[in-house]
Image (tube, rainbow, N blue to C red; front, side, top):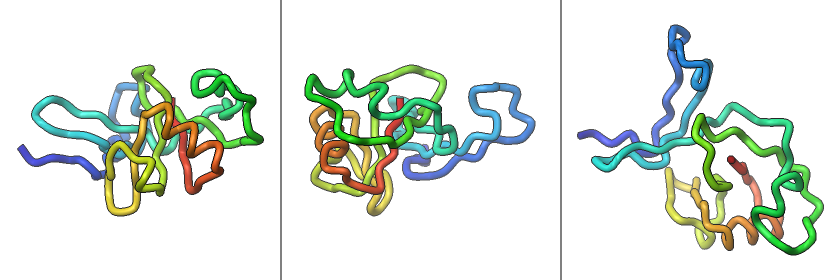
Length: 119
């Protein structure tokens, strides 16, 4: 099996599934156990401050970054970012992924960028 990890998948205009209509998906993981990716082009109206209680009991730092819709399945907050030391994995060179609550907290509090948060 050829892994699609780190690859972009662009939805066909003929795809009938509304969850992926006009979507660009970055594959985070793709192996014999399954596949997982995030939709890159679906920002929501929500901001980090709207979901901050999922990350911390501390007051929310001033952060107006949008939350992106990660895909059709709800999951924990996740991030694509550039901070190697706060990564669960490296998706492609210089692009890191985390779903770790502690890593997310540090990324948001430190204002590290670029940073895209997904739910």
